[in-house]
Amino acid sequence: MKLGIYYDISNEDYHNGDGVSKSNLDDIAKCPAIYQWKKKAPECEEKKQALNMGTALHCLLLEPQCFDERFLVIPKFDLRTKKGKDDREQFINEHYSPDRIIITEDEEQKLRLMRDSAFAHPNAKKLLEMDGHYESSIYWIDDETQILCKIRPDKLIRNDKTSIIIDIKKTNDIENFARSIELYRYHVQDAMYCEGYKKQFGIVPHFVFIAVSETIDCGRYPVRVFVLDDYDKDIGHQLFRRDLNTYAECIKNNTWHGFEVIQRPDWARRKDYE
Image 1 (cartoon, rainbow, N blue to C red):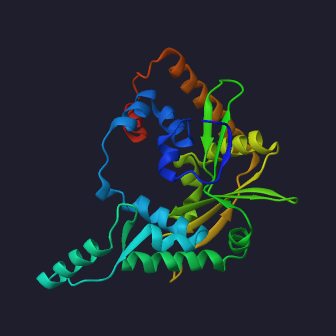
Image 2 (cartoon, rainbow, N blue to C red):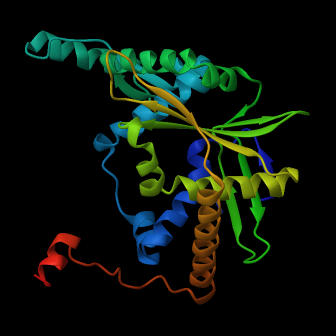
């Protein structure tokens, strides 16, 4: 893969192509064996609807003109009747293609409310409406490990005045988004994406999360705009370096084994001293 930034690589080609990504490093952080397992383990397509909803929200916020091309909205049918079931099957047969993700009419209505809620937030609206590039892909060689790395920012804003990476996060508990940062290692994403941007453009960008709740609160879908503090940015960078170095060692030695260490819950361990 030639180094640099690409604006026309599909999401599928990006994920299946060369280079180590942040999600790959998440697996390495658990255990190198998990990284190899995930590459080979089969997926149940029917159970990926939560991921599809996130993809659909990204599309509505960033590229709404592509929504009808990428998603097929299934109208409501009375599935208690044979006619309703037959009509639904006929609709899918007439409109479905492998390139389109199926979502229901209720799901689409919810997604559009979430989108409108995001644009009601003044900071989110400003960032979403600024000129930028969507779903671009950046590739670079890490100086320390000589490993090919890659990132795929949701949106890049780059002009004479500012450099910003926008990342859209769908969350079910926006009041505890700090927990999601730890659980899903968003601080590592911040570090890796800023590193890739710096390698491409020579400057460190601002990294901004637009968090959109999928859980309604008093009739609204809450929206918040976050940036990490310096401490968590530093910890994210340390973890990024650690995991990339581990990946490089696995590549060098062609070893992906190892056991994950597990321990009993804290409440159980405390009982040992009672």
